[in-house]
Every structure is written in C-alpha cells, then in structure tokens.
Amino acid sequence: MWLPEVAGPVELDDGEHRRLMRFLGAQSQREVIRARNRSLRSMKAQAELGRYLGGRPPYGYMLVDAGPHPNRADARWGRRAWKLAPDPRTAPHVKWMFARRVEGMSVAGIARALNERGVPCPSAVDPGRNRHRAGECWGAPTVKTILENPRYTGRQVWNRMANDRDDVDLRTGRPGQYPNLPEDWAISLDVVHTPLVGMRDFTDAQKVRARRPNGDGGERRYLLAGLVVCGVCDRRMDSHWVHGRPGYRCRHGHTSARPCPPDGPTLLYWREDRLLEHIALVAVPDRPVCADTGGAIVASWVEGTRVICGRDGVEIRDDRDECGPWAPVGGWRRRTTA
Ligand SMILES: [Zn+2]
Image (cartoon, rainbow, N blue to C red):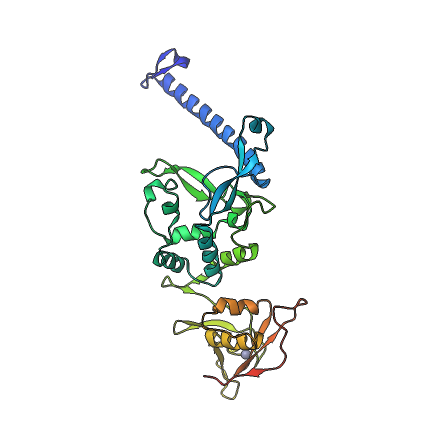
C-alpha cells in the first residue's frame, strides 16, 4: 500500500509509519462522523417538515408522486417529490393488525392468524426489502415492528433506528440496528400521509405491550386493574390471578398476617370475565354484547370511571365531566350469580 504522506510504500514494521496510519485513521473517522452528523441534522429538520426522505415504504404503503421537488434547484432538473399512500393490497392488513392488538391479541397470535389466512408478509410483497429473508412467513418480530411504527399514524418519522457498525450482519454486510430513544425521533407535527391507524389506537396498541409477564413466560393481564373498588369497604380491589384466570379480590384491609375475624365480612372475589359481563350489562343495557366483543372493548367503556363491586352486582360511577359513550347509570343492576 502506497501513501503520499510517507512518499512510498507503508512499512508496518516501521513504528513511525504505524503511528502515522493510526493518526490518518482517526482523522478520517472524525471527518466521517462530522459529515454524518451534518446530514443527520438536516434530515431531522426535513422529517419534522414531513418530507419523505427515501428508503423503502413501510408495509401497507406505497410511494406516489407528490409533484415537483420542493427544492427549486432540484425541481429544475426534473426531480420529483414522493409521498406515502396506502397500498390497497397491504393497507387493510395493517389496519387489521392494529385493531386486534388494541383488543389485546398477542403479537404471536396476530402473526399466526396472518399466516393462517395466507396474508403475504413484507418480504413476499417487496422481495428487495430483505433479500436474505425472502419467502419467510410472518413472525412475531415483524408484527411487533409494524405495531411500533408511528408512521402508520400518518406522520413522517425518522431516526427511530441507529446503525450499529460494531454489529454487522455477516450474511448481508449490513450494520446491525438498535432503536433510538423516542426523544431522538424526528416526527412530523402534521399528518402528511393517509393514516392507517388513529393516534389513540396507536398509543393504546403501545400500552398492550406493558402487560406484566409472569414467571413461566406467559402474560398476566388485568383489563380492569385500578378501576375496581370494593362495595363492602370502599377499598381498591387487588388484581389476583387464580386458576390461570385474572380476577379481583378485596380482603377489606386484612393481610395474611392478620386474618379476617370470623364475624367480619367475607373476602370479596370477582372473576374478570364475570365482572366484564356485568359491566357490559350496566354500561350499555341496549347494546347486545356478543361473545366476539372483546374484553378489552368492554373495559374501554369504563376507562376513567370506578366500578364498584358488590357481592352480586356492580355499579359504575362516572365522576368525569364529559359524558362517556353511554349515559351514567345510577343504582344497582343485579344479576344472579352463575
Ligand atoms: Zn373490601
């Protein structure tokens, strides 16, 4: 190898040459970092304006012409601007995935259902996307990536992932990627392309992720945690898992160290599914609740209220100013226990 700096071939045995090589290496690395930061800043600013910055459109979208390029110099030589538009072949699947997730379906369950229905996965739709993955079917990581992408809310997002040059994929030669913290994301303030999910459903879908995992790798999920109040003693009821099912219980202030006195009120326990049935009856008496109505939907009707549990009925107290989708109901609506 020849270098002008040493006016001849590099002798790696020569200490002077080795020092020079190290110096030149550090120099060019600094230059590369500086140039990258410059372009990062400008891309971040452009993303905040909602401009499409290139790259493959996310699954569910395709690129359409958006007129002449906003940069006049670029427009003069015929450069066009592009924007994302829903791809009629794949957009319905993205909407379907968010809807199932908001209802509480697991990411693996969504992937399984997509495979069962023969829905083409991202690398099947766009074989150039992940060449080494072509022909694979839906997996949980792919579904998770889609559900976490805020671009589906119609906003332009950039800088969600950073390249990790110390972790290069040996098959593709591409650097590995790791997620940036949300505060480093550049998100356009306005909706710049057609959303496939509303902001509210998108944030709800992110909350589903916050389920508490239990020791055996399964998930324990309480739809009504924090909303359920004991009608006997007015305390908040504890989430309590029994026989593989979520439920709520109140020991009326007694702990296992201080057992209930024999003449005191007996422990109050509600299975979550039974509680949801009662809530559906009280919250929307006229609306038939079929077996397909997910528990998460019923739970969303009472979000922000208090569900007071008696021994054989529930009452919903809504202290909010604005009315919910249903009229507040006073009094008890009783149902015989099954
Ligand atoms: Zn109690």
